[in-house]
Image (cartoon, rainbow over all chains, first blue to last red):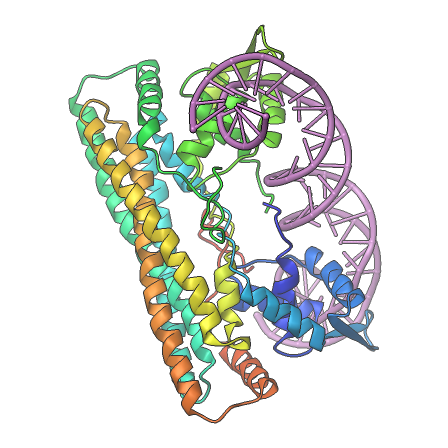
Amino acid sequence: MPRENKTRFAVLAMLSLGPRSGYDIQRQIRRTLGHFWSESHGQIYPTLRKLRSEGLATARTLPKKGKPDRNVFSITPDGREALRNWLGRPPEPPPVRNEMLLKTFVGWHVPPSVLVQHVEQLKTYYTDLEGQYQKFARFLKTRVAENVDATYWLLTLRSGQLYIEARLRWCDEAVTTLRRVERDQARAPKCRQTARSARMNKLIAEAKAALPKPMNRVQDGVKKNV
Amino acid sequence: MPRENKTRFAVLAMLSLGPRSGYDIQRQIRRTLGHFWSESHGQIYPTLRKLRSEGLATARTLPKKGKPDRNVFSITPDGREALRNWLGRPPEPPPVRNEMLLKTFVGWHVPPSVLVQHVEQLKTYYTDLEGQYQKFARFLKTRVAENVDATYWLLTLRSGQLYIEARLRWCDEAVTTLRRVERDQARAPKCRQTARSARMNKLIAEAKAALPKPMNRVQDGVKKNV
DNA sequence: ACGGGCATGTAATATGTTACATGATTCA
DNA sequence: TGAATCATGTAACATATTACATGCCCGT
């Protein structure tokens, strides 16, 4: 996964909204970006120190009556420049590691009902989330009139909504398909796993020519073979 | 990102199709799972050694006239059991780190046209991929008749198709929205960045109550607050 | 009174990619 | 002839999470 350190920019993005402490940054990332970005505080504190040493942020220490002092960081003009510069560079595609699909790929090792259960659980999860997104979309839309920039937040939300729609459609299709496979299996003569493995192995070999080629960097349309 | 080591299961999944070398596994993961899973060989070779020491795989060394011996690994009954056991456990949601959306969230720091460019590039990328997926879907469908298990592969492909559809729709909506913002900006009086930052800062504070809560583990429907 | 949020950080550990090392064969 | 693929591994490094350390305040 390491390619370029994105944590820096997530932190700078938060600081661009106003001065904040490490704790504030983590909480706000969780709350506002949590659906498409994550950072742990174990990353944030060292990153803040580095940003400061590079002159992209400054720190002010407010002594507190409690124990730990509160360190409030502010973005500098250089920091803003770095942020804008990053915004101008084409984004890298997100890392892909979808466990549900990995399970699906070798799902024929277990009865279809096993996958159906997972899919149903996903569906419940996404359905709940869909409702929350809708509610929040309504809220944001009321603010666009007085704050056009709310549109950008709305855009990220819209991405989530479309994503969820796609996921839910897949869940429905998958359940239907898996149930059909189950029915067919009940009717047809049982087949040994070793034979099925061999058949899949053959299929993969035959598929070779038709296989779509993943390109893992969008930026250079050149797509070095990966 | 570390939670449970999934590499083991990706490797076991490949081995479940038949004996393979580390090199074969990496190549096949790239080609068949590449669109929703990735592993580097720096992970695969150590994992194979570990699987072997745990009795989930066995190795056979074929001496080669060239230089390096070819180490072919096979899955053991225990390995198959471990795979089935993993298949039975609910999948964890994929890690979320979408750089395009992070850029979108703070996109008001740069002219809308900057984001438009990124979105157009994404669109080109996904459009190309869509064609490849369609072609491959046609191929797979011709094989389902003689190999029902091809259905599982088709399911993962279908997930990708729906995902791409959603992405493409978002791209179109985003371009429309961003162009509208651009037009409005040209007409309206210019506003200082500091004022805009302050407004966004306020919006985030006000949004707090309406914010959807990300749950990062599907399995326990209980969703500990994250 | 006990759990969670507030609050800051470090250290241990896990996970992941890329560079290095080495060299044959194949294809344009 | 030079790049890509075949082929296997190790080591250096980057990145990320969780546990540890410490302690107040607030709500139930």
